[in-house]
Length: 124
Length: 124
Length: 124
Length: 124
Image 1 (cartoon, rainbow over the protein chains, first blue to last red):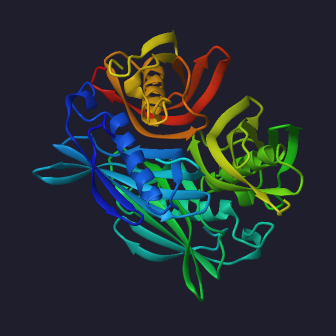
Image 2 (tube, rainbow over the protein chains, first blue to last red):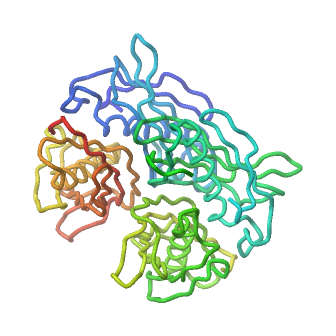
Image 3 (tube, helix red, strand yellow):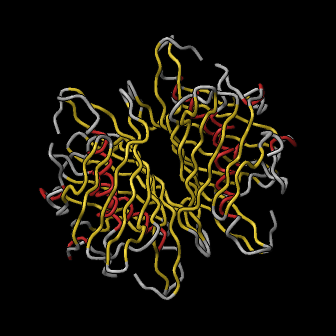
């Protein structure tokens, strides 16, 4: 999170948005946000969304994710929206969508699904 | 579609719902809809949703899909909702969600993402 | 399995192959094996591969899968090869590959990854 | 690549390995390689593997990927192995596996599938 320069811009039970301003070290050769930075942000948003529903004293770990990269990651910032689709005692499934923000509005950059496991005895 | 006994229950540009009534040959050993039948229905709904935006005289083919199985597939019928997230000249990306319908309402059975390719010279 | 007409053609710890002969009710409009039948077979092969490593008295459930459809499903039979990549107490991850068999040899029809959960008190 | 500090450690038609030495800025809160860095490396290895089979003067773009995270990303370095499973004029499908290297040998950190599109008129 520190490395990505991301901050929480929305927080509700089962819902977390993370916003990441444009920065040169997050871009690839054509000047767009790198797919790795984009999907790291999305994975983190999903993780916080899941964690928001977990009991105190537990941690979260992604076990798998899948992303479709829809449009180049451009704009002054990216916002990743993590939403819990199915909370579970062991496994939680989240959707994560990433949008690029600029003057013209939002562009849908990536959409994905993330499975997360609740870990006792670890605190994130 | 014939084999699954499914019919179109909603149709709009980029949106197709398919409904599949319960049938014994679609179930697995515990009496629930089989995951294969569930995701076939979802894949078909995504395919029709994509096709609804394609030019005349083209066909559709799924190139990949990913599904998270959220709850057992139970109820008097399943409905699969295919929605185009990103239309494209070559590749189209759809979301597909499957719900089980019974007296108590809807249960979210599966959620997934499907990539589809537009094929010239084939008619589905 | 009965519905697909599949039989086990290879069995070793963490490895199961299923073979499904061509049958008209498994095909789509162009005469190829339907993607749904193809991936059901693959999911089943992964499930049996995982189950081969589970303790007695437990069952198996796929929690998610992702398949890339590589070539049309043609030939006199399909063989699905499920292989455990990572066994686990809670979650097991398998690879599953499907090949079409004909006179000319094997064609790679689909490749995928399947996550499976071990369920106590259920017997498959 | 520069940001990840990765170098090519194997190159053959359809096969690329990338090696990324341990670095503090690539780790998460528990000292392991971050899942984002791990899967970025894997996605890059898949991209180079695909590119190795493309015609001169074309570029490569991932359209989707899916990763299962198998073990914590630990060791003195990670190696990502990208392998073309199905080359195509439009779409190419690669497998990508990541291993952690330490004294005890290799640990399987992640496995995934990546779809890539060949783009004319762009040079990577």
